[in-house]
Length: 263
Image 1: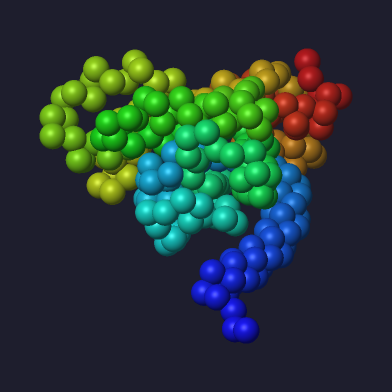
Image 2: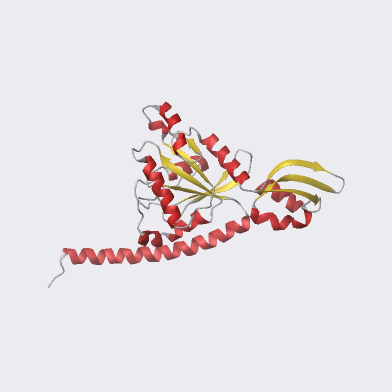
């Protein structure tokens, strides 16, 4: 006897699931290689997290002038998309879009999308994008934080972008919402309002997460001097006869390279 439509549908679903699993294996391998290249490049990474349809991809488009897929659907972003962004003081950072969260994300889905969630745990900072126009914005934000706990991401600094302020019927109401969220900045990814302030705060948070140091670097160590310029932040610099004295901050992962020159 011929197959019923239900049997045909089930077979089609199994085939699609198998295809997705194969794709996810490829994605994980690709992301692993990509993360290793990023570590060698020593550029800080900011992972965008947020409830589905909060506007993460639109925000990444705005700050990076790129053309990331924007889709109003769950898990539209499987393979995280990363863009290099120039911060206000000239330092560069990598911004990575990640999968949109939903309330009570099932454990099976967390496992299936581990390729994209791994990006979050290895980030230097999280940018939590919240659709502030949604009636359940606070609950959605709490759901995202709960999912971060589920994947054991609890010690990464976070900045919150209260997105879609251009859709608020009473724009002044945002003043009373900011305190409901951690390090919150009102923005519109669509119009660009608030983006300069957001990037300035992100840059400051990256600075706060760095370790302070004072180093006496011989001029022959041009590579290390450039490394502080590019990946750290300089607060004071004095040029001596044989060395440059730099007071500033660098990411913890770079400290070992300066040990013999730390004052």
